[in-house]
Image: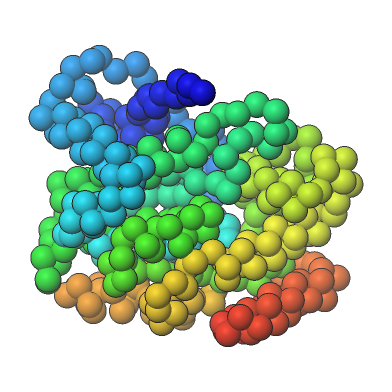
Length: 365
């Protein structure tokens, strides 16, 4: 029997854009005009398309190093040579911000970037935010009839991310006491591969900051970002309006809901199923592998989120820089009828975590 299988490395758009920006050839993502962490304004519009770059951008010493390092790290990932990857990243400490959408993760990521001396509007969403690397539990498309080789792409994107973040923060920031560079990253999708990431990086080699918010105000914040609650109150299966609504659809399909079922679901019920799925999956993802105390769980709130920032700034030597205030709104009062269902979802997750020896935090509205 003969298998003719080939792997072909085609750099992702995110990798190319960040690399071009580091070579000062592309500023559309980082010219200061796009605030992906704005707490009040919709930022979920289609991303700025990449221009066609001259081949010269890939011939600079920085680009050649990035491409070579990415191939080496990708081969190490495929071969299981994790000591090589750990050695490559020995001077980089990641600060992973993990949480369900609209739970304070963008705020926290922005403030961590400011903590290492960066204006977050000058750091591309591709580098700092959720979409890259693209990790999913499915290896093929959701219809099950057309492979898109996601596993191969995901491994290559993980290599791209590890390399480009390593190089970016060494280029743009100063090392901290102890000789390491802190690399903040919002990483919602880590839940799909959390155990693998923890085994790859090793114990004590990254910070894991988990933000948790009550599902009802999270739901309201999601639909606000998407243009409002649909007039019929149903989830917009046929025309999702943002990346978050597409993620919710993916979650529901993963749970076995059909297209017609989702189209008939109340918006809050779709979000509650997705929210519950995310937090149950988190408990079983391997995120707590090795040392449960390594995971810092942060209930959504002004004091809790701002305190994390203060702790980092004290640790990194700039304790006098106060964090930007978290903007708080009493969203849940708009849908008091949703609260019993939201509280039931919280209790379901709390009981499931407790059965596994984990403590899920108390969540206010």
